[in-house]
Image 1: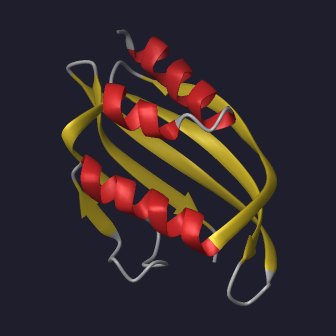
Image 2 (image 1 turned 90 degrees about the vertical axis):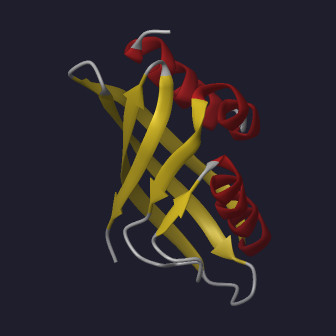
Image 3 (image 1 turned 90 degrees about the horizontal axis):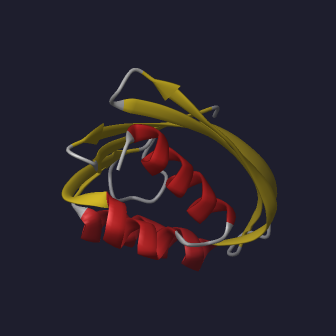
Length: 122
């Protein structure tokens, strides 16, 4: 797949809650995910698709999503693209509802996502 095809597939999966299949099909098994801060207690960086699945599970356990938007992809060269995420969610434990916005940069090598980095405001 080309960079543009991978980027479009990721955006479509995020819009339609297809992240699980996306991880299976389009992430390198040793992919790295880096957050702007250690929100989950797992550290800022996790390695491997299983670690990324763990981040997704933590999110689902701790937040109720009310809506959001996925913008992009924004291509950069032949090995990177960015996506803007806007999320309206409630933290289940505290009941605090928050609107979040972050930019994610994805790195691609040999037709697979090998690194994702998330940038946000605090």
